[in-house]
Image (cartoon, rainbow, N blue to C red; front, side, top):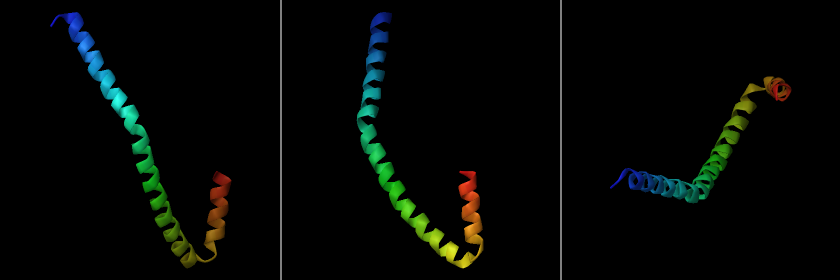
Amino acid sequence: MGPGARIEMLNNHWSHWNWQKVVGLSHLLARRLSLALSERSVQWDLFKIFSSKQGTQVEEWKAMVLAFE
């Protein structure tokens, strides 16, 4: 294999690898979104439990978060 053929072979290999990543990106993002939504539910439930035990401080903390955002 000459130097030119080697470079072309490597470029083809890397291009195919990148194409496979692009094709699989939708599945990866869908899986991550599904996981994020399920984790959001868990975090929201824990937040409600935590908030119910903190009493009056919750409203102050929420105001601080809104001011920060």
